[in-house]
Structure formats: structure tokens, C-alpha cells
Image (cartoon, rainbow, N blue to C red; front, side, top):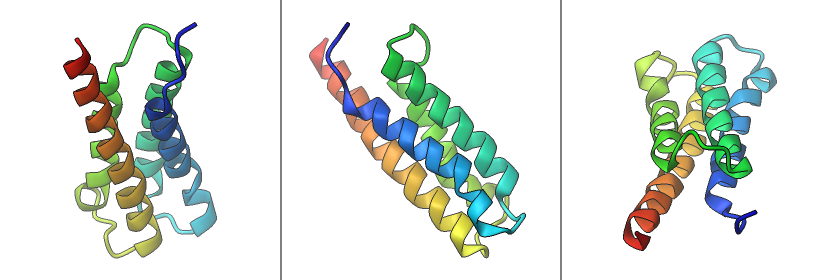
Length: 108
């Protein structure tokens, strides 16, 4: 077992927040894309947490960027709860993912 890394945990929690938060809004705008992209981000983070060979830090970062741009791509910027959830969860996971990928690149 390797050392625990907090970066995949951030990706997992951000994806979980994007996946579960639409149930709190009772509004259908942005629900499906945010839940699907949140599930993909959570799975990428979970795979990295468990240490299974699969998604790299770049994969989780790509899903985080997709979550971040989803309000514009799927036209739910007018639904503030959904949009802000996507921007905060996606932005935070993308920043942490870019930082982790940069650290991994510098370490090798």
C-alpha cells in the first residue's frame, strides 16, 4: 500500500457532491449532465484512491473541467444552485488535479 494522497479524495468528494446535489434542488435543469459528469469524476477519484491501474490525475482533471463547463454547455447558467455547484465542485477538483499532475510530472 502506498502513501495516502489527498488529491484523489478531493476529486472523489467533488464528484460525489455534483452527483448528489441535484436531488436537493427539486429542479430538473442541469440535473442529468451534472449527475453523469459527477459520477464520472467520483469514479475517477475513487479509482485513484484505491490505487487501481486506470485513470490518471489527468483523467480526473478532464472530468473536473467538464463539470466546470457544463452550465454553459448544457445551458443551465440561469439555475443558480446547479450552476454554482458545477462551478465550485468542478473548479476545485480541476485546480487540485492540475496541481497533482504537475507535482507528479516534476517528481519523475
